[in-house]
Image (cartoon, rainbow, N blue to C red; front, side, top):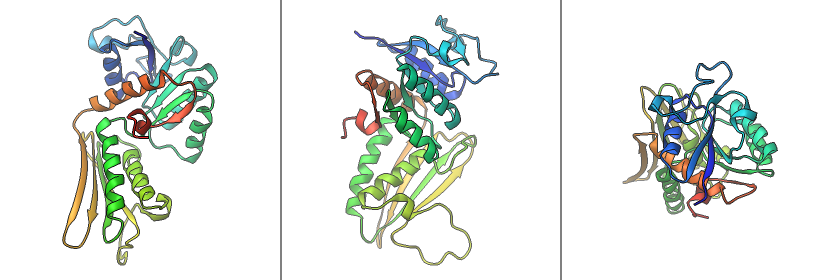
Length: 268
């Protein structure tokens, strides 16, 4: 059995710890590195300490030390940190699973450029359930192309810093693509005051932030006399961690290229 050496970025964060626990529980993966921001109190500590486990690894802020001997980095941090990580990874042959959201176009371009030098799997949501939902949305959009208004409602915890969520935007992109449209041309992200009648060609977004909501997404297809709702609700980050490990295994057989969870799940 081939064992992949995995590093986790943001090792002291909520998602980072979930990933570390998942890697330590996997027979075919080895925790070989852990990263955190310079100045973090976690730097220099064992990433398994919160589980009462000694991993033989230390959390590093220096990329050369934290990624030495690593096959795949899993990164759920912030765009500015992820972009620094992929620059290093592309130069040193480390593959990357990116779960970070909130990239502007220059960041997306940088990821695409890095994927010419190493293998990258980037997706706004690693959950297998969410990615199956995306396929359902593609099918639904093709059948509700006329006479149905499309609204995407998402809810997350109070600490999330970007809106709409990357998952909501991906849902919009999938729906727009199924309709032969570009999301940038039809998206409506805010409504206030006298807005006039709804443009039937638009895709609306609504954002909720509060409490400890892990992530809820609902797409509403509202017609005359009926409405169809397709929803996905996360009750734990475990599904994101399991999907990330599946993505890391997928990258184990790749050298270069940019992929997403649809590739990992064999939907393409």
